[in-house]
Amino acid sequence: MKRAADVTLVLVLLLASAAALLAGGPAATPADAFAALAGGGTQEARMVVLGLRLPRLLLGIGVGAALALAGAALQSLLGNPLADPFLLGISGGGAAAATAAFALLPAAALGLVPAAAMAGAAGATGLVWWMARGPLGSSSTRMILAGVAVNAAASAAILTILSVAPSPRLPGALAVTMGSLASANGAAVAWLAPYLFVPAFVLLLHGRDLGLLATGEESAAALGVEVGTVRRRVFLAAAALSGGAVAFAGVIGFVGLVTPHLCRMVWGQNTRRLLPRAALAGAALMVLGDLVARRAVAPAELPVGVVTALLGVPFFVVLLRRTS
Amino acid sequence: MTLLAASALSGGYGGAEVVREVDLAVAEGDCVAVLGPNGAGKSTLLRLLAGILPATSGTVELRGRPLAAWRRREVAQAVGFVPQSVSFAFPLTVAEVAQQGRAPHLGPWRPPSPHDHAAVAAALGRVGLAGREGAAVQRLSGGERQLVLLARALASEPRVLLLDEPATALDVRHQLDLVAILRELTAKGVGAVVVVHDWNFALRVANRVAVLHGGRLRAAGAPEEVLRPELFRAVFGVDVELVERPGGVPFLVPRA
Image (cartoon, rainbow over all chains, first blue to last red; front, side):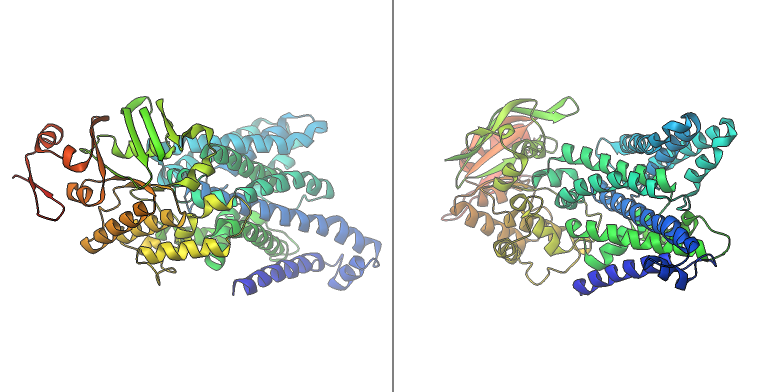
């Protein structure tokens, strides 16, 4: 049954990707798009499909995988089913730093935006963890409250920067706070790759450790986990994944929360098996969400963050009611 | 052969020393019961022995080498630790928890071998949880959860087993099972340290007892030498009577 679920997951991702490349406005109908992908078609169709839709698809795959991996890892590391880069303020911290970078850096240095987002995400992660940690370890309630505080501070910082920043920079800064894949291009995809692959490898390396940490630090240490080292690495990896996602697609909520739980329902709680599947499922979810965002109110477009929130909020409520 | 040895071991939390200058050795086949009033430092001593709490001074040696000289995973391969309780944030099954016991032997990439699966099945069978592999631990009673944690430690096939109040939530049938399991293990040369509150449980299972009071080792030795009425008066502030039974384990009764 799990094998069938694996096959289904890959098929869903492939079909969603095909739909994302083929579906669209009159500039490239499905037939035009197919021709363009096959190497023919009009110049305009090739430009739309290869220059716009393909990078957007790849960015969606990367961002969805990054957020789902970060969420799955943080849930296990913190032993908290409600952990998610968005709810814990990690994406918010990254967004605040990215907004500041957009507003303050000279145009030539905008390549540093993802690094700033990663630093902001790492800072927010450390802050939430420090605030949530009491003498007896961290509690779910304290952690979510710390996330609320960090999110509020990040929003305040973003609004302050937007109020005082020079106006030509504002579109870029606004895109960070909205959560959208619309600004995707080949360079963004290339920039995201190291923020995805290096942390993903670190998390897979510690997949088994993360499963042990889900039952508490003392329990994990007794089973051979170097808790301090693993915690530092996983926090940094989650911050890099969240920061990378925020830098190129803005704040997109709930993918990191919902995806791992859906995967846990299908594949069980073995973290080593869960992580790669969560990455694929996050990618599929993001591609599908972006498809809805593009087509639901065409020719206008919704930010994909709106779609993931519409999906994620009811899920969060159910999870909150179930978690003691 | 000495498996685990603490000398002048001290440690605690946030600068406060809870355990002070304790000497304790566990040899092959030993079962050491650690007794003492609430807050005496029993659980802390166990954490120090397992190396999951760093000592502030003194040393713990595993097979003659300081714990710090071993890798964490190597210690976990040799030393099984059964905590009082574990918080299960996710709906893990009984089998998934028991399989965690094999983690120290697997490392990051190696999938479980037939031997790993067999060790898990044997451990679950030994604690009486065969057939319950698919049950969610979150839904189990406190006693059943203690059995799952015991199975997890047994699955790791340890040389030394450290148990923190493993019998508190167990009914009398399972307490006797636990006694039998500990006797089987020690007969095979495994060393065990058991923190207990039940003196009679200690008398049944241990060949040596250590009594902690205020973080210090108050007495240590053979049960019948250590568990004397004078010690109970001094450490617990209660009067007890040692009832001898011809041909059986004596038992202790507090005088009301």
